[in-house]
Image 1 (cartoon, rainbow, N blue to C red):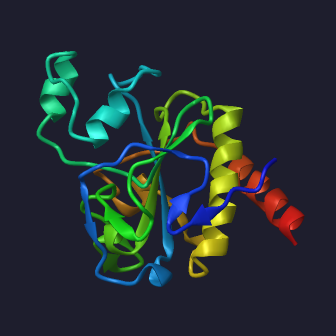
Image 2 (image 1 turned 45 degrees about the vertical axis):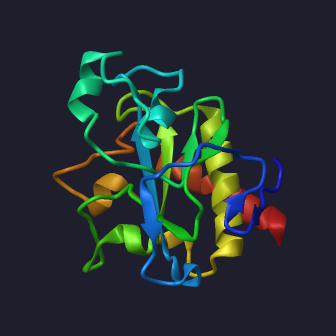
Length: 191
């Protein structure tokens, strides 16, 4: 597995698809201390294509699918998107506030977008995630740990954990044990 790096709040080697759905954080980037794992697929349950990036960049053609008409008014983004192939796209610089968590709360603190990073995995609550996604997510996470020291393994959550009743992702198909095992293996290799 390759070491992944961050330079000036951008993931080295990630393709960029800049989202306008972002703004300045009310805290310095050095205080980022939560990682939120999400899942997304467009149309729901379908994989491949550019629809997710188009959605994050406010370029989704609402006539392309009936579901798109329902969501065309939403303004959403994430810092990173990891496709099923492991390809990684950065939509928002890590020092900026991406609009990924919505109404949310973690350990009594609301507005999780203020102090978190959001990573979207192309997937659903029901379909297994790919080997490539687990490896890339773990590599990226280790890099985030090195760049943002307040991020810790125990401060990684799913969207459903910070928005219960409203969100369920990444869902029961996400293998937290597998992800944490890969993450621990990478940590040992960096020591």
